[in-house]
Image (spheres, rainbow, N blue to C red):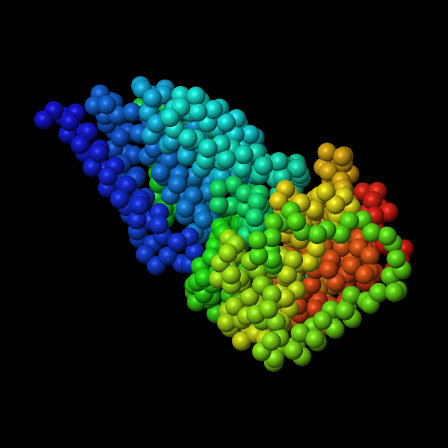
Length: 599
């Protein structure tokens, strides 16, 4: 047996060993704490050994028939591993690593130019999968220009595949292209504005920092885990990430800062290896235990993102997270779904621009909230009090109650602290949870029953995503969408000044919350967490904007609800909140869309 044959056999054995380990970790659920972390270390070690071997023996392997696409497939598998680790841990370093590998494959053209490549259908599918995975990573990293570049190449590849493999149906890949185009159309509508992730430049308010540092609640909870899912027919999505869960995912992460994320190009060497000048490990040094985290940032909360889950699967995942929750932890649960079986989100009703009516004819929001709360509490002892009347619909039609998530299904999990966000046209059904908790009082954000827009055509959730979720993740963009403004219609300086107005308002509201003597413990115990505090501030903004936009008779349907109630000092009727919304509306010249004169 020649030396080349020995090298080739050794390489193939290393490939098979790495692939077996890869298959084992690929099927590990992307939620809960993985007990057997050593499996991940083993598979990374296997691919490190494989990559190093092919580098040291590249010439002999090429002589023995090694194709460039095989090298690309190894690198692509490593990228998959890193992305899978990101989805399990939410650690940004793994997402950066995946991008490093995928970009190297692209720059080196590993799936291009091989002998007989154009005739190999299997290799073509590998290349298509590579592009789809790289696009998803680039989306999450907000690399808009890279997404555009990859999309152009992906489209061309799909077209070429249809032309050269006429006996193969590429319908699914054409659908993937359509998904990406649709997703980009929505996601890039405000592409030049601030990031969705928590950014110290925008979200840390110097004037309120002294108050936050002095704020001490009787009990402080740490936000480390979240469950995110949405289920709507025809909703905007790419792969298994819907638009609403994408926005929430980004909203619950830190914006990368510092030199750690300033990645420079990877330079190829003659022997086919890479010199990586980034802070990430690159293609050769794949030490999973290496400390590559940005020292300036705390860890991101772990997020279990479920795509079109069954109700039983959703409950099982929530049970796992609650079981593993630390004693001082809190779980954020984001559920976005319709309350009607088989209802298409495009069929949702919408309240458009309404006539101005005197505000003094309406019940004050604070009184209304208290009335609703009292009614919920007084009824909770009755078996028909609403725990199993209305629901969120998760699943295809025809399966009856199997796909319905009822408020009563959540009650067992209130033995642990929950921060529950319900975005649905039946969200108010979950008010019954307030006061019915089994151990820990839950924090509830409940969306309006109907979206409201100046232009009713903007209400198509299949095209724009949920309005309530948009307010919680990108409040100024949601405000502009509400009144019919687009980023292109607004000068950059005007938009930046609007961001400053909103930042000043949030800073003032932070001080009010920190100094309030009547702030409920449910909110006080999470106020120290930057992510949850930002959600609270954005809820206050969303509620006040919709309060002044809607007619009084629409309040019940068009305003979000929080339970327990926040202090009246941050209600829409308070002077400080009203003044902030008025200032923003005047700055953007849309004050005529609101009811400020009636208050």
